[in-house]
Image (cartoon, rainbow, N blue to C red; front, top):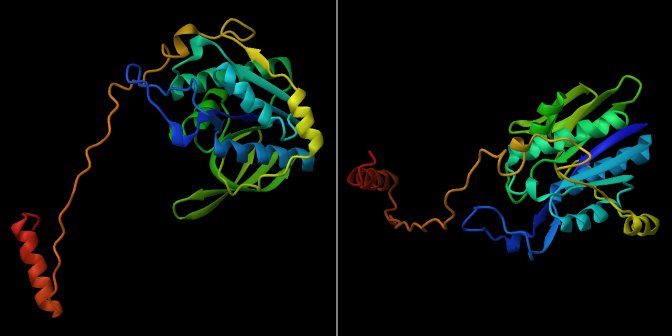
Length: 271
């Protein structure tokens, strides 16, 4: 049986993003939020693997108390355990501090239960688009990471091996790896399933465990939140819209048209 860990993030609806001009961080209070779309595919993959091989799914997220709604929505994917990391000291974390906080929590969970076989993340969050948190967590856990996964071709529980397809610029790469391994998921990885009514009812009743800075995990204060975030936003502004004036060349003769183009480029100092 598989032991699966899925990390999700609640993000602002992309049509309602606002930036705090003083801190340079996203304004989340009073803004409609959704589960990061790529994380839905990570949840869908966990759901698929659990139904096929059996096992347990733990979902973790870091955010304000309102993120409980995202966890309850995630619970509809046959999830067994929900964990919310919620404390003002976690606020303002960049990808470095977020990776540390998540990885430290995962290590704690593995110390009180059995280790996870797969760590599933969305390929990136739509509010930051960095695609750094999943690989950052893998580095801190000391496990391999396979990014941009579009398909799980094979999983062998006895040999503890997995074969996946991942998207690269030149096409598709096939990778075989030993578990445990961290995967970041593309939208093609599996279809999003329809949750049965029984799971929807169960999800409405399940209560997440809330972890704070003080308990039950021990964090290094200088490595979380703003203190642990070397990334700083010094200025937020709307870039100036640059206008360009084109030149229409109506010459039908190809050689003459090329001569005109070359002469114009020389006039502009491009050639």
